[in-house]
Image 1 (cartoon, helix red, strand yellow):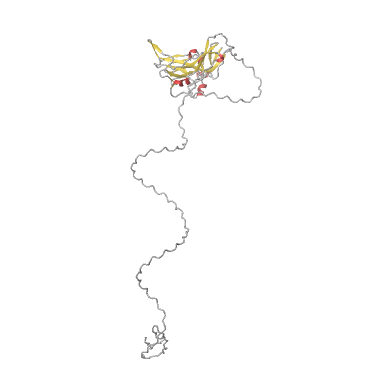
Image 2 (tube, helix red, strand yellow):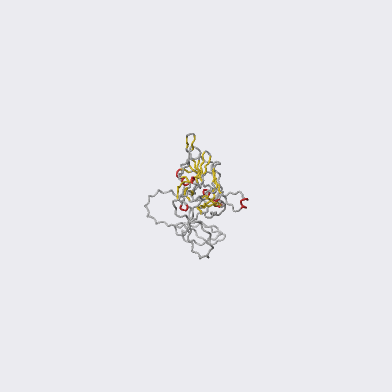
Length: 401
């Protein structure tokens, strides 16, 4: 219970009632001036419930209770949703770093097994052209080309001038008369030549040029029958002295006209020799033949009343090993060979039984002289092409009356 002091103040509020009791409003105080304190009044009636007080302070946490029992398994949840995620591109590669310092040499490893052969590589680029090689020997003459196609018939030409008198005709049928003259023809090939103008064949053989024994040469005239040996041998003779004869025991040689076969790089022997030896034929002729040389690029003509047997190139002489060799009489038919070659013969060695084109073999031919002035102003020259050599050699004609 509160005591009201009514001095010098105006009482505007009643006495607060006790809790849980209904209070009645008090009597409004009368303002008294200069009044003395009265006696203490009796307690008033219980006041009305007051307004709700402010929240109290948070209390202290209580102790943890005991762990509860395990609950039952809940139902299966729904499938989760797949949320779209943002894709990121690979970031660009950074700049190349500086080369690192070289590491120390490693320990030498064991030798590995031989690996399999690699695949065939691609064809390489064309290499740079090398320097020009040395001049090789002249190649063999090419074969005769096929005849060309028949051309269209031309217009009829004007009547020409009368031609010169023709050569005498072929001889008539052969009679029992024996002429007694012999003609030798060399083919310079593996083929056996035929006798001209249907002359009678006496024998065929191999073209012997000359023999060398004890470093001495014995030449055969290619226009005589002795140059056509019926049998070929690398050593067709033996040497005899003091009651004994030796065969193929000395450094003796034989030389034969060769063919157009390619020049081998090594000596040939056995059956392969036959590809390099020229064949020949000996014929019975009505008269003795002669050779006519022009020393020009054109073929010479036979004398009047003489007929031509064959034309060729003017073969003069030859040398082999050392300073030995021989030559042909320019009146003999053997001085007119049907084909030109820088090496027209081959050397055969008896002890070895082989034949080869050695570098010390030389042939000599009449050259072409176009004018008298050119013959006195000759200059040195070297001809390497086959057509140049052939064009520089004089031509010849074998004639018979």
